[in-house]
Image (tube, rainbow, N blue to C red; front, side):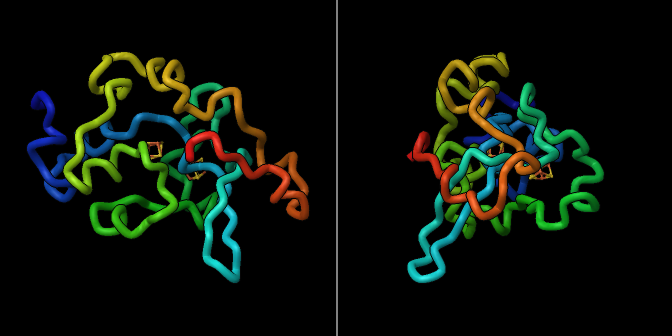
Length: 146
Ligand code: SF4
Ligand code: SF4
């Protein structure tokens, strides 16, 4: 891949390899979010989708995820800009507005651990949806990345 290809191309022009490499593996997009019906405000929780691996922060069944979790969202060059709840550090969000990647991104450091070391990864901070009563979801709202 070209050095700093994310600064030279728009999202829609990336190859599949370039697209996949952009993901920093933070796992933040796999957390439950709650929406205030009155105000539309979105709250992030530390409740993770049941398919998220707590160790690697990757999907345990990426190729079948839509069959298992029908509301898992496919990011695309068309929808990234419309997803206001995407983390502000999400590489797709940054590149969609022609911003550079942060210094801790694996494409810059060459190490996936740099995401955890920068405090961006959800590793060690999450609980599986299978362990939480839906009535209690608001108790798990976090502001770590605000
Ligand atoms: S928030 Fe963005 S960068 Fe982080 S895991 Fe999700 S898609 Fe990848
Ligand atoms: S199915 Fe996989 S990619 Fe989709 S939200 Fe769950 S863990 Fe994340």
